[in-house]
Image 1 (cartoon, rainbow, N blue to C red):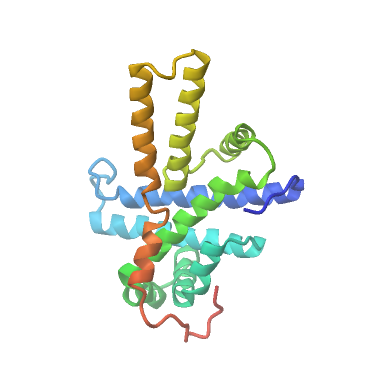
Image 2 (tube, one colour):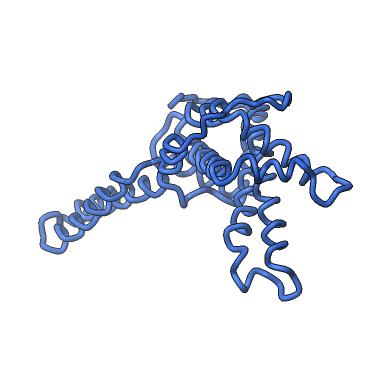
Length: 243
């Protein structure tokens, strides 16, 4: 992880702005995954068209996040590989975004059909994978500052205050949370002079068990799926700019 002591105000504002778009995309995804919840769909709406509406907003919003990533010139090995290795998907998603966020006189634009027919399930998984990696990048960003874990935690809290959100339901964050809980428990037991009692040993065993399960969980299960079932055709022939 690259370490930096200082960022200019402009650099910080740009990162905050990019993170805000990721937050907005996350809200759109929440709408998408809960589309079939009876409490989420108004009685006067058709469920299928409701699904079209929320899925269109979710996928289109993700291209805005990618666009910001490219404009800012951020670097991350996993994210950059996802963009470079799937030029077809980049084009399909970008063109799909244009049909959603730019007025089209036709109800069904061919670019919208291309997104669903040429990409299919694997394209949806790619969008979800890059979404998770963007969250991971945002979560790890405070670690670019030289400082203690407490100071990095303060930066995350600041991000949450400014943006209104911080990704915590990701594997990286959950592993860190379990590790922090274990360290806190050990400090408390040492402070109390109780590290060998049956209760203390039972608590440590439970925390160690949770840590073992967490550490045994793959960090990128979606990426593993993508690599295993990657389509053979991954080059663009549309003449459109690639990622």
